[in-house]
Image (cartoon, rainbow, N blue to C red; front, side, top):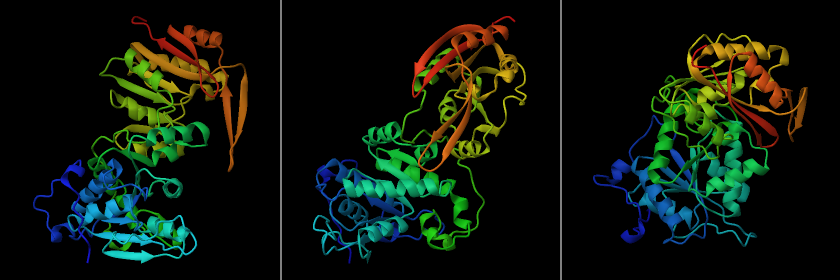
Length: 439
């Protein structure tokens, strides 16, 4: 029988309203769900009175209230908090544990962490895989090296199966600095950032899970074969998911991903120059991080010549107008946009086409419209190779001098608001150009 643990009310912090919740309603059937089991990760040494313990308790309690099964490693600390929170309303719980014979620093199964179901594994690695396979989403609290290893595994798996990946939810503001450090010192791409979500309250965790419940609906009707099936959302319980068409979430997808925008300062400068309401174009929108930020203020359209990046951008921003297009040949129309944003894209255009592209952008702006571009500074045209551990990047660059940028702007009719240099991984030119009020 499960043990119901009642924390003192002064320790509960953010209490969940459970009026009317009974054992039968908490354990009700949720047959149509693609996400059912939520795995909790976090430190085993967190005492019951600490904020992290209380947050885990309340999060598990709220999720169990909504019919989710809580999975954890069967130990003390965050694991016990997760079980206690769910069992406080008689919710479903499951422990995946390992009792070591030689590893004296591993906590093993905690006698007071009593769950509805439990499974024992032969070693630490198999136990970690069991926690991953038995979960449909992961909530990761503060922890030590064990939590770091679990975080690394679920993060990598989410990137590998992006699009039907199991959601990774990082609980707490401290994760910002950790992920920012990974961005600064490691090779982290935008897909790897896109699979991370951050929450600061139980309600935010629930909201994220319900969001993905709808967003990934089609994943549950895919054929899943072999050992990989349990690593994909819907693969663990795909036989129980009814065949439904994919439904895009109509509500705004807030910027929940951990990590900062590459050009936050420049985006804000652009916004200060283009007063809403306005129609905006993002040239070279990539995976959609900038366009999502701009969509908070404007009606936005994005274009990029990479089909793969557009697919990611549309997946991350299902309600925005984004399409595959080559700016050299694409018809932008005339007098449509109040602002055009082009970060790290114009420098991929060969010099022979630049005048035509600048003229096309000039014509597409309304009178007084702003063209804001960020390009690599330098001289000449190069093909740059960037070797990473697993593949080789090759990119064409037309490097800009300040004189060339000024000349292009003036020859195509722009007024120069400002041109300045920015230092990131390289030296970049930031150009702010305006189409005159009267042409």
